[in-house]
Length: 263
Picture (cartoon, rainbow, N blue to C red):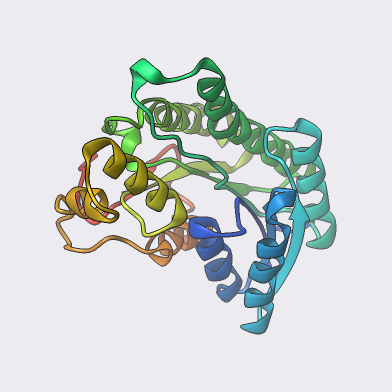
């Protein structure tokens, strides 16, 4: 296949809702064929994401995938390459959050968040890179980090650890795959108005004796630009990282947090 094909094919995992949905919609508007992926339990929302892209005049395909399953990730990449005449970019967005004090954390929960946020990202990075190399083309791999990859939040300890791991894995992959023309970068959202942050707010509020929304509002005071972000704030950065404009950027985790944390 050619690097110069008219429509690029981009995979977005965790695309049924939240930031992943926002990224998929933006990439659809950019003119890419977006292969949106998520778990089977999110199938209805996944098809809604596809519909929102196609209704706006874009091209999208839904694929049920579990990023913790190597065969499922391989199938996702192969399906994307087949329907889109090769793969051009992979956005490893899928992830979960858990809110708990370290003293109360259960090993099974710790293993689960590692399996999804680090293991799933590793499998996604690896499968995408293998596809680019097999095609003999350059490619872009983009992963989901977080503001907590630079400064952990209390009660988000293991989640923070997984996002530090994303930074490290992104840098290592960029070093190893540059010779193939593959760039590897990550985006680091701050406080975003999504279901994930609703959960964080709920858990923190319960722990601190606050009302719903108070914990979120308290954390939001640290945002220099004065507002909680929305998925499109992140999607705009991913749009850039998936475009030729970012061809000379690799190994970076770029914060998009309104000015909470400086890297």
